[in-house]
Amino acid sequence: MTIPLLAYNPTSQNIRVVALDIGNEESPKIYSTSALLQTQEMDTLIYASYRQIFNEQQTIAYHRQPFLESQLRSNQITVRDFIRGLVTADNFRRYVYDCNNNYRFVQLCVQRILGRDVYDQAETRAWSIVIETEGLTGFVDGLLDSDEYLETFGDDTVPYQRRRVLPQRETGELPFARMARYGSEHLTQLIELGHRYTIQPLVPNWWEFPKTPTSPLAYVAGSLVAFSLLYLIALIPIVSP
Image (cartoon, rainbow, N blue to C red; front, side):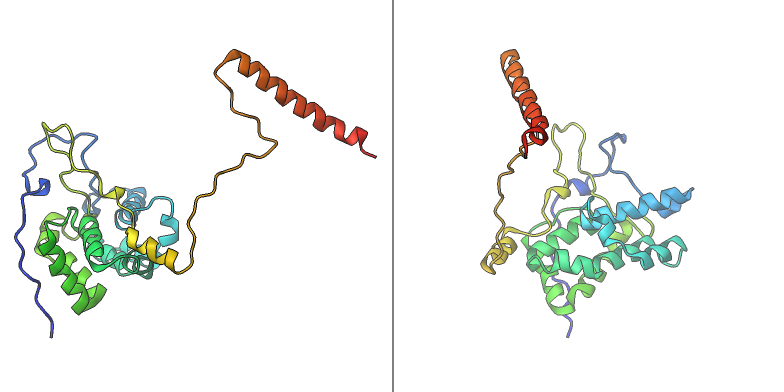
């Protein structure tokens, strides 16, 4: 028996404020297939989708889904279906779903799919129950098929963080990208399993010159030491038997 989504009251957030400001460099970049004119723009849209869902720029190549990309390029699926495929992919399950409890996972998915933060604990509990009863696929379908998603992004637009900066405010909402993909409790579990995550100080190699000092006297002393090392290195083949 499927439990319906529990009711929760939306609170007043920036995303619920009607946009009256003029766009600037702080405004979110909107990527949509309805406005594509060149092939390179499709590449940018796909890259923006990976960056939005996985929240990582250095490892996007590792999360690539060639089959989904091919379907999107040939108009066999929409951007919404492409996002659905990324969130239900094995990489997202292993690197986001398996590394978090349900509450934190709900927060991450609401941020990345709906483009806003969760309203309160009531919304978090409501979606957590959906995960427990319908699994990851049912939870993702609930977000992507919701009226909020369809009215905001539709079928053709890549999700983005909405209304992060408000006019006449010195500071706006922090970007969601600041959140790590797993919480501190997951790191604690790894340490309890025997993994060690201590940071060792980096020892400079003996052949690396020291950084240039700010003092002229120290600069001269550092240069003499460096040239002395080079001279000794050059004499090693001569004095060796």
